[in-house]
Length: 252
Image (cartoon, rainbow, N blue to C red; front, top):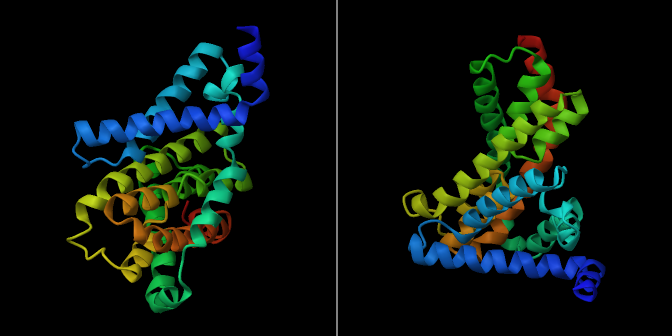
């Protein structure tokens, strides 16, 4: 057992890939058998990941979820920003620029419209729950943009850890809703070509949600939706702690 533990700890990243692979297999199995494909396997995997993170925190008293277990320490690296950004960039390489140009002005407008509408909805919910501090309102609103924009904005304007956590939660809820809802509404909104996928990615913005939702709809559309969703995240990170924060400060 000591030898096995030593090998696992020394090869923690390989163990992390194996563990995530098993979780993904189980998630897609449950999606196919229990929901007949109506709920995408990625959504189930994220739910299982959240439960595992909660259990890991309870069991170890740490702050890194299951990564606080020595045998699963590699998940901390695999789930970090480096791997995430690598995956986003790798996905973007699947885009054909001839199709990207066809999105034109509509694609650009969708990015800014998506950021602003999501922020307004998130900020309005924050106000409804009694928040009056511009920093808190802006951070939670930014979280509704994506769970990446929320922490970036909160750190930049000095939000508390509790508020930043709420912003991440708001972004995760949005991501899961987009994952589940995309294949259900795809036909009714004409989400069946690269141009509509780019506009959809620009409006929704959550890269993980859009990618998983489009994968359940048509895998060929994933790179196009992920491309504009990635730009959306960048625009949100720029606008959140600057223009949007100034506007909220002026109102409150």
